[in-house]
Image (cartoon, one colour):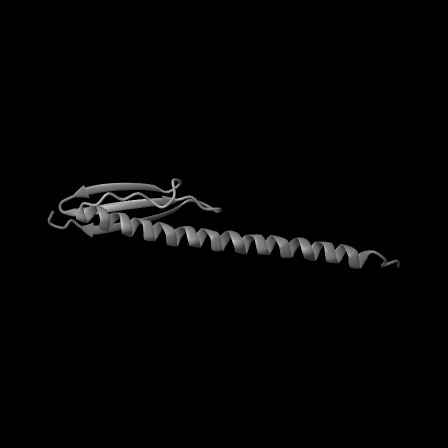
Length: 97
């Protein structure tokens, strides 16, 4: 039996698997960073709207939706990410203006 070349094939397959796993880890970290960003933007936008200050998100790609009802401000932030868009919602009481 001739085993020449089998090490090359095993190395190529191992390298492909390592690259795939590394890409999945990077995509996961990037998606979690987008979620943290969505939580931060939603909280900041809710606080700003509650005290009557205009808020603009740090990036143009972030979508912020504000609703106010019964002395409560609800803000939903959507941040695009690698895997899927991340959403976060913050609720804050309206302060006396």
